[in-house]
Image (cartoon, rainbow, N blue to C red; front, side, top):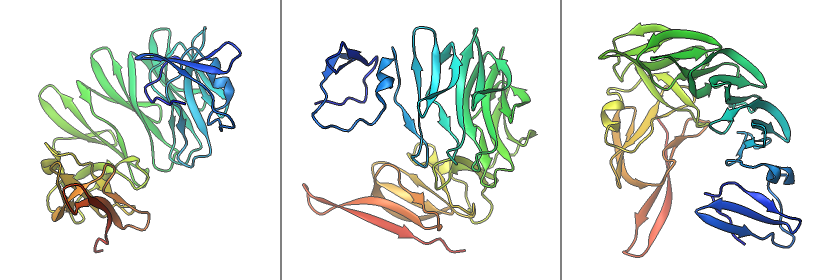
Length: 304
């Protein structure tokens, strides 16, 4: 009868089948006759459960849940990790074969992958990410006042601040921004560089939506960072890493493809994006009148 995406603390009310969810007030969700359940009934036995997530291939379901003793990550109905506290939903690898949980235990934080603790424990852990091939992993951590990146369980150099970590499309290298005192640095495979030009490394998303880093020197005459400041776009990187696209401006946005303006559009969220065959696609609206508008799919084929 009602579904709310801000529901919290869902539980079964006695044996009547009603589901009580406390969010902004209490809402009674009454099962509809012959309705299909999207999640196994055992989920409702927990005291608290944030939104569940599906794996990229839609074959697996995972969620974090709290019972009377602590927290756990449940994958396809099986407990994959147990912790004192879990701050966020688990993360699937791009190949849907692995699951990572940022786990709190005895006041310390660690990353648990497929039930195994990876590396040491830290004061704080966040920003976990798998490589595009699903075989490597990294996360940000804090040790005292210092921040560092942990890659495949190995800690990197310490900084005052570490930005989000991204693997390259071939999964062989990593890159992230870091700050030490007043200096902003680019770190590639653990090596620090003061050259943070947007032309050199471009951070964005692959066609699968995975955060990646790509060498932006192929076609980009000007890096996207200058344009994105104050804009609303996210850089998208083609499957071969040779092309990139981003938006600047709102509500009507200019599309930049390989550093060059390529039209102005009123785009929908999620656009633009590259398909697996390297074609850039944009969902855009065009107003036919004050009350009517049409939806178009615009496709660009970047030149080699």
